[in-house]
Length: 178
Image (tube, rainbow, N blue to C red; front, side, top):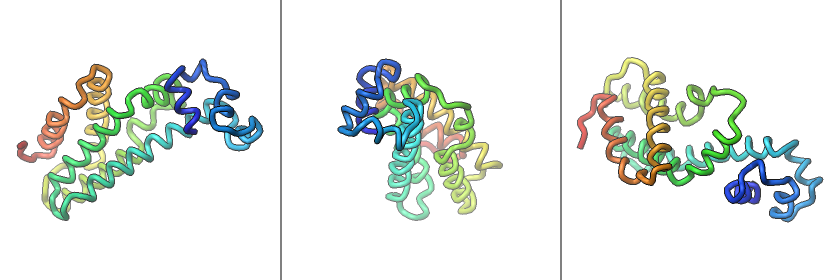
């Protein structure tokens, strides 16, 4: 996976051969085929790994906030998500755009949205904010954040928009912005 990621970043998926991947990983072609049927399977594996790593970073950032600091937790979620996408924008483009997933289900159903929906529901239960539908709000926030951070990363402005992202998240749930 690491060798494939490096090669895909350097030369793109289409130009990368399975032989280059196996050589870069120091494994035989047969070993490759024990785990993957094609390059597209490798891309799917990289896609899953991308999301898992991003979720781990987000969860860690949220957990660092004190219990009961719902604004801090929401800000940490948004900032960590933004940082993760910005830091890996090129890899994101490869695994989600250059070789798109078979469907668009991830825009409304993925573990990042699930995590945010739970955070919003928990904050709502604690009376930190009042939103009608945590899941709807999570899908809306995730897709908005996803779009603006990738746009900013592609244009070299990712660091400049974190405060705007957090402020918009706060406004959406009815919190005062700093």
